[in-house]
Image (cartoon, rainbow, N blue to C red; front, side, top):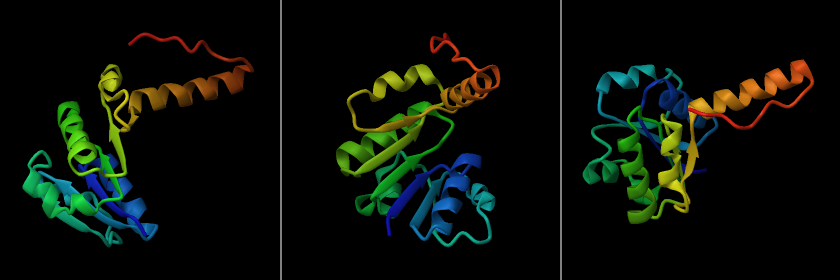
Length: 145
C-alpha cells in the first residue's frame, strides 16, 4: 500500500483521490477550500487537510514526510511548482507528479525528477491519435501554442 498526498481537490484532484482510495491506497487530500472536499465520492476512505499547501505546517499535517507519491493538481502553476519542489527537494518524496496548466512551463521541471502532465498536451496527443487512426496517417508532431 502506498501513502499518497494529493494537492488540490478540484475536479482532477478529487477524481484521482477517489481512484487511489478505491484501489486501496492510503490517501490524504489537501485543499484551501473546505467545500472542495464535497467533490470526493461518499466511498472515499482517505483523509482531508484543509489549508494552504504552500505552508510547511499544512504539508507536515498531511504527512508529506511519509509520502511515497505526491500528486499536485491545483489550477495555479506557481503553486504547483513550489509544492512539487518542496516535496522533491526538502522531503525527498520518491515520486512527484505535477499538473501543469500552461504547457510552456514544463521547462522549469527539466532535470528535477518531477513528472509533469499537461491537460493541453494530453488532449492534443489523444486527438492526434484519434485523427491519425481515422485518416490512416500520422499527424505532424510539431505544434505551436
